[in-house]
Image (cartoon, rainbow, N blue to C red; front, top):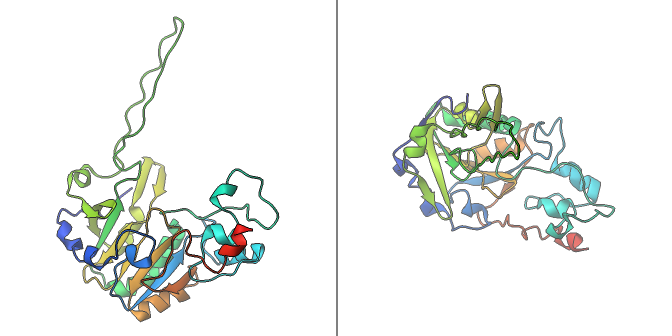
Length: 274
């Protein structure tokens, strides 16, 4: 069941510490996850979203296939040797044509692995989860159905309206407002974060990783920007070392000022232009 174990948080003041520690809307690490932590990690979204790095495809695998150089700030379009202009063109030799990572969503197996690393540092305390309000399933809107006939046949019965994908109390609660992004806020246990998503039918659940998540003591924070294909983690050096060393995650150390924008991969960018 979606959002099981999570309750709408009406006091957005619990998140007031985040915005002053962001460096403004943009492509830097500190645009997404707050500054002030001892260390940071970038968790790459797996190209094969249903498998962990030990079982599935990794960015490093793609680099080996295309001759790109793996590094902390690599960009998918650079290592896959594709650009926006190549989207509809026949890919020349050396370009990656396999699966690609999802933007804005850390796949459930990787999220489970990350939460497992975070568990010793959560200490059983409540965690806060923020979900971007712009996901199409959140409020159930944005869909219209039209039915018509030119003969005596009866029209099909109308399709019932889509239901909101989150509890009504959350839709009615105050939003957490950041530059260019508004969020619904929840509170619950650490592993309840895996229940965020769209319950399309009783048997069909589409998971969505949190946009922001942190414990009550603010000792760490994870963040997934809507347009990023990686998730960022800030915390103690010990925690970040554990994230980077996790067998089921593909992660790199980064700094708060590092550039993760489209043009941020200065190592592989020249090859992409060729």
